[in-house]
Each structure stands twice: as structure tokens, then as C-alpha cells.
Length: 184
Image 1 (cartoon, rainbow, N blue to C red):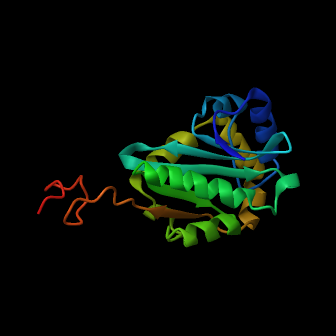
Image 2: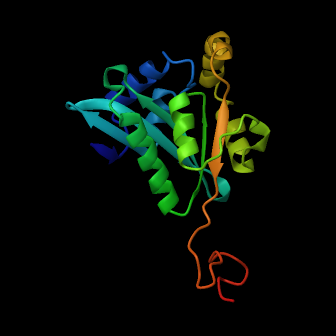
């Protein structure tokens, strides 16, 4: 079952410890995880099976920032269900959607959602650049990057995928936020 809710303290501690085992995610402190409000949780067998964190960025962008499924629950479609639901919720709110990943599974989901994965991070939306600069200034994340650095270099290349949401359409097919208000 997927639920959108904040993490409990126990879930945040477990998720932080689990994420430290993967070279692909720099992660968050327990305090940061507890402050996040846009978290999709997959519960299985009465406990946390996985989580997907989304963050609303400036200029109408949402970053699907972290997707993690606990090892005992992998291979059951939980990661795909979490990612697709996070993407659907952002899209239905009229948000543009952005993701960065090394994971072949996540990159495959980006491709299926027409997010056009790219290897050049210079082509990321400006909102993502601004967010990543601030996000990476955390001393905890800098230590994690140093600790995981050698392993990260042996992993698949980091790519990003982005898709602009055209938003609601007016009678002539123009976006309602367009200068003519979708009238003409």
C-alpha cells in the first residue's frame, strides 16, 4: 500500500542507514528526512518497504529526489509503483518533473515517461541547478560524497530526465498561463 505522509522517526533512521549502503544516493540526515512532507511510503508486512521523496523547486519544477526500496522488498514492483505515483501526483498538480539517477531501473522509468534522460548535467533546468547547489552544501552530504566518491566513479554515469508539463489547456489548445489566456 502506498501512502503520502511524513516518515516516522524510526522509518527515518532506518532509511538513512539503508541509503548509506548504496553508492548511488547521497541521502539526507535523519532530521532532514523528518522535515520532508512530500514522501510516498510503501508499507508491506506492517513495515517500511520503500520510500520516494519529492521536492517542489522554484519555477514550477518538482524533483523526484530519492527512491529507495529496502533489499528484502526488491523485485516486487514497489520502486516502479512509488516512482510512477510520485510522478503522477506532481504532474496532476501541473508541475514540471525532474529526476537525477544512475539506476538503470529509474532511467528506464524516465524513458517510459518521456523524460528524455541526458548525461549532460549542464542541460538541467535552472531550478534544479539552484536547488542542487544549496542541497550539496550540507556538511553531511559532503562527507557522504567523499566517503562514497571512489565507488561512485565506478558506477554508471549520472543522468537527469526532465519533462515540462504544458498545464491546463484552453479552447484553442494554448496553455491557460499563456499571454492570451488560451483564448484565440
